[in-house]
Image (cartoon, rainbow, N blue to C red; front, side):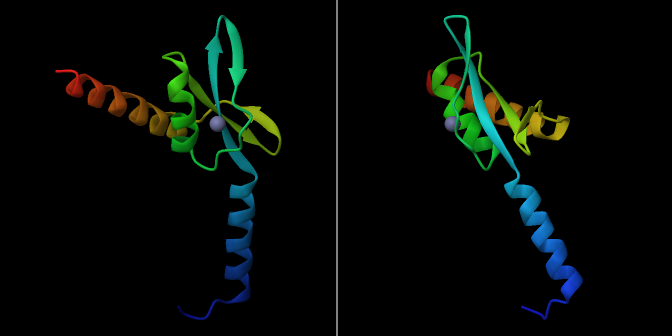
Length: 95
Ligand SMILES: [Zn+2]
């Protein structure tokens, strides 16, 4: 560990604060009702794992400063990799 100068400390605190300010929720459709899990998942994968047992129509959305927003392309990519990676595994294990 090297010595951190003040601007670096502040930058890292801000980065952490920003991260804390964003969380992810799982959402799915249950008998045509839209539901979400009401957790504050710190990672997309946690939210995806939470959503997975609720069936195929699940998705993940972000909550930023208390306001829900759609995932950006980068986040969507992470979720899709999880979704389709998991499907590959399921298909392979059923052979
Ligand atoms: Zn959840």
